[in-house]
Amino acid sequence: MQLYFLGRMFRFSLIVIAILIAAGIILFPYIENIAILMAALFFVYFAFMLVLYYMIEIYIKPMTKITKTVDQLLEGNYHARTQGVIKGKVGELSDKINQLARHLSEITLQEQIQSEQLSTVIENSESGLVLIDEKGYIHLVNRKFASMFGKEVKDYIGYLYYDVIDNEQMQTTVQETFLSGQRVKDVVTMDGDGPKKYYEIIAAPIFNELNMLKGIVLVIYDITELKQVETMRKDFVANVSHELKTPVTSIRGFAETLLDGAHEDVETRKHFLEIIFKESKRIQHLIEDLLILSKMEKDEPQMVITEVHLDHLLEEMMPMFKQRAEEKHIQLEVRNDKVVFEADEDKVKQILLNLFTNAVNYTPENGKVAITLKQVDEFALIEVKDTGIGIEKEALPRIFERFYRVDKDRSRMTGGTGLGLAIVKHIVEAHQGKIEVASEVNKGSTFSVYLPLKHPSGT
Ligand SMILES: Nc1ncnc2c1ncn2[C@@H]1O[C@H](COP(=O)(O)OP(=O)(O)OP(=O)(O)O)[C@@H](O)[C@H]1O
Ligand SMILES: [Mg+2]
Image (cartoon, rainbow, N blue to C red; front, top):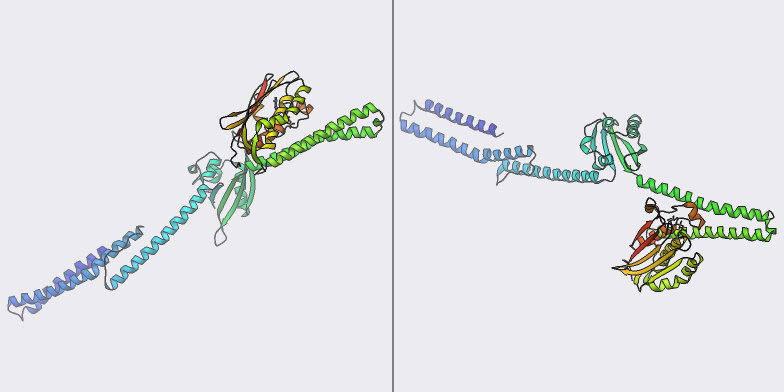
C-alpha cells in the first residue's frame, strides 16, 4: 500500500514537471519577459507544491500510518493501533481500523482463554482422552492416556491408532465404533508388570453438520480400584457365608441327631448341647465383630471421645484377663503406668481385649504374656507381648486383613474368625494412631499400639 502511494506521488511530481514545461512552452510566445515567465512558472510550481504538501499531510502520511497498522494486524499483532490525531475522512477510516483491531484483539483473547481452559481440562483430566480422525490418525492424546500405557504424548500424535495403541481390545472397540457409527462401551484388562489393571473405554463417534463421520473420541477411565472394591465385597460376602456355614451346619447336624433320639442318653445330650452352645457362641462372636467392623468402616465412625485413664481401664479388665491366663497356665506380667489421654474408651478396651485374646490364644500353655501401658512422647502406648507361636514374616503384612488367619484350622479351634486385628487397625486409624508388630516364629510376638494423647477432634 505504501508503495502504491509513493508511486502515485512520483507520478504526480512528473505531471507537475510536465505541466510546468507545457505552461512554459505555451506562455513563451506571449510573455517575452523571461523574468515574468519564470515568476509565472514559479507561481504555478508553488501552487502545485502546496497541493502536493496538502495531499501528503492530509492523505498520504495518515494512509501510510494506517497501512502500517493494517500490515501489523495482518501479521497477527492485534495490539497494533494507528497513533496521532487524524482529521477528515481518513481520520474516520483510522478510527474504524482501530475499532476493528480492538474487536480482533478481544476475540483473540477470548479464544486464547477458551483454548487454554480447554487444554487445562484435557491435560488435567483424570480420564484418558484420544481424538482419532476419520482416516484413523490420532490428533490429540492427553498426558493421562499416555501415562496409563507408559508412553509419551508424542508417541501417539500423528500416527495411525492401530500402529500405536497396543491393546487389541481397545483397537477392536475403535473399529466397532467406526463401523457402527454408534457409541461403544467396553472394559479392557491389562496385565502389566504390576497388578492387573482395569479400564473402562467409551468410544463415541463425531459427526459433522452433514452427518458424516469425522472421527472418534475415546475416553478411558481407570476402574482398577472400583474392581478391587467389587472383588473385596464379593470376597467378604463369600467369607461371611463360609464362616457361618460351618457352625450352622454343625448346630443343625447335632440338633437333628438329638431329635432323632440321641436326647435320651443324658451324656450324649449334654455333649451335643455343649457343642450347639459353643457353635452358637461362635456365630454370635462373628456377628458382633461384623457389626463393630461395619461401624468402624463408615466414612465417619461414631466416636465418643473422653478423657481416658488407661490405668483404670486395665484395672477394670484385669480380673477377666487373669482368669483367662490362669485357665491356660499363662504367666501374666503387667506394667500399668498412669496415662491419661483423649480417646473413645470402649474402643480402647476393644483394642486391649483383642490383643490380649490373641496373645493368650496363640501362646501355648505355661507361656508368658506381658501387658505394658505407658506414655511415649505424645502417645499412649499399649503393648502386648507374648512368648507364643509367632507369625512368619510373609504373613505379617496380611494379618490386619479381614478374615485372614495364618493357620485357619488352629484359629478356628480357638473360635477365631480373623476379624480381631482388622477391628484393632480400624480403631487405631480412627484415633490417628499407629500399630506395629514384631514377631518371630516359635519365640513370640509383640503388638504395639500408639494412640495420640490429644485426639484431633478431642474435648
Ligand atoms: N499374638 C499372636 N501370635 C501369633 N499369631 C497371631 C497373634 N495375633 C494374631 N495372630 C495371627 O493373626 C491372625 C489374625 O488375627 P485376628 O485377631 O485378626 O483373628 P483371629 O484371632 O483368628 O480371630 P478373631 O480375633 O476374629 O477371633 C490370627 O489368625 C493369627 O494367625
Ligand atoms: Mg483375634
